[in-house]
Image (cartoon, rainbow, N blue to C red):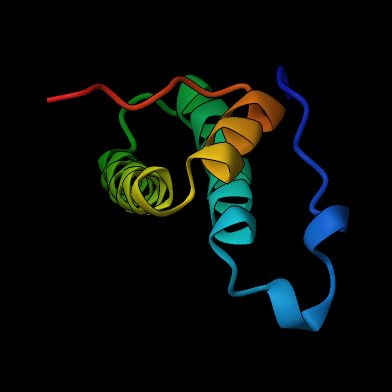
Length: 88
């Protein structure tokens, strides 16, 4: 794989698997895996649809996190090295 998958060890306890930060981190790992898969199988449209759904869910979670806790949002964005949300 071209990009390194992120370690969820900081969110590994059972209490925090439902936290927004863990969910975004887990979805980011799934996005990276699907992106690598689609580089090899570029006509796999069902995987493309799954990727779009994952990206939409991650976007909604990041939007919620940015509205509720801006400091955690910025830390998570920097840790995962993903782009910030566009302002409308």
